[in-house]
Length: 397
Ligand SMILES: *Cc1c(COP(=O)(O)O)cnc(C)c1O
Image 1 (cartoon, rainbow, N blue to C red):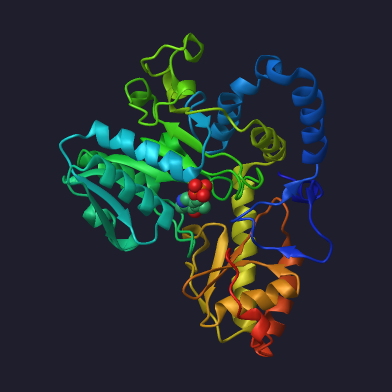
Image 2 (tube, helix red, strand yellow; image 1 turned 30 degrees about the vertical axis):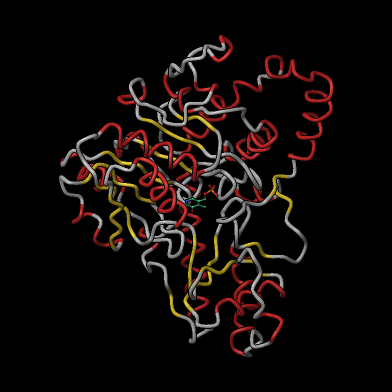
């Protein structure tokens, strides 16, 4: 059994604050201070450039990728770290389109995160070959996987509502009509058990600063199935994805296996911070995380609905159909969220009217949920959000 009291003690959580936004930026493992201190003084400070070899910096995209693989049901050696999720989506999509050259439709859904859609739009503009980004309602995805579709580009867990797509069923449907799948795991990795091998996924990518607690700016990961990895064209053909980066050959030749999905110099400080977070992930079983996540989100829904009749649940009621977040719709949701934050409950707001709360079993427990609901109830029932200072929009919501 995973010991969540033990994991909670390993995070820096400010006194008096209930952090329900680990779905946007995970909390900080205490041990990152010491580890980064050592990295700065002993590795960067003392080794300077020799750290790329001596401290294994250059291998980190692969070694850290292997640890991520364990959390998403991927084969070892098929996940590599680097860049940001938007870039990894672009890279996967470009590679996937190349594998299906006679088709012109990229299928996505309106619940997808805008950056994924924007990256597809940018790629289509660049290719200039009449590609179409077809965006349908989330519930219509399955019916729209037809033999026109080159690639499905789907985010498994909806960032607004937490609704989960059935990765295995949609992948099977895509394969049955000859389409390639690109899965975005932004709100899946560290939130729900993911089994890429069982789902038979082709490509997947995700970020590590949300549920995985890698810190602001932590790198993305990308997965390519073993059956594709030796033939796939990486599109972003940077030198560290080259077969022999230090041969400085003027012509690109893709590297071996997943290494070809690397682009440029890896973010070593961020990878090391992520390693510290992954040490905590080593202490828990993902099935225990999921069970506790469902218990926490169920409790939150029950308590908020009992206390606040002015909000409407915007997430699936069935815990098995929901990621590790709960969203409530409320017309003045932005102001309400600012009022919660002012009283020590941090969630976030997603336009047009969604108040979003993330539940991270590694450092959130039942007592936090109960305390948070007391504050939320006070704000909502006494209209404490109805004050001018809560209505000024920040750049990052
Ligand atoms: C958070 C998120 C992103 C963010 O992409 P970055 O390039 O890391 O900023 C992309 N897609 C989805 C589905 C997300 O939830």
